[in-house]
Length: 172
Image 1 (cartoon, rainbow, N blue to C red):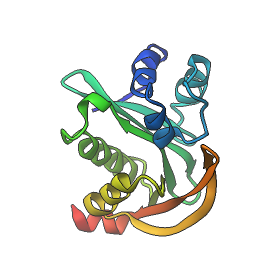
Image 2: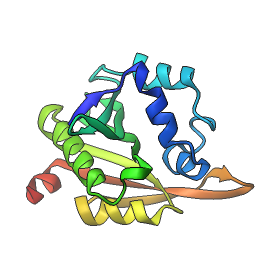
Image 3: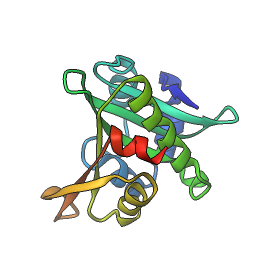
Image 4: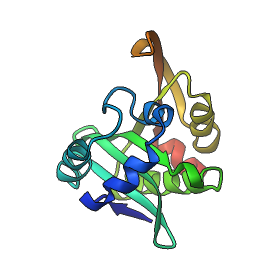
């Protein structure tokens, strides 16, 4: 179940991002490492909750949070939503929670928010996530933005992937 993030979720989320590599895969350089409480509260809680701007959720199973995900850069004029930060608790990976969380988010986006298009970015070094979005949900790679982020003195790019409502409906 998708539940809006609250300020008291900081310890949970920052714990999931305690490993610098996990932090980079999820946040890139958008949020400094380690994640700071003020940044979490401002971005994921205080500026969230407006279905015309940003919606941030934790994903709960049996009342326990196992992941987080959010829509950002929501564009109502063009029926568009971008999936920004998405992650599953490292201790709960490979149990199907990522699949269930994304299924719930896509259902929300296409059914309730009436998006026509949902997109996301994946770092080229994160081949596991790239394969997951393509094979499990049918996201299409639109291109590679080359050398968009610098890590440890080296540049890497990110893929932009998208899923359109008719493609999603065909899978239902």
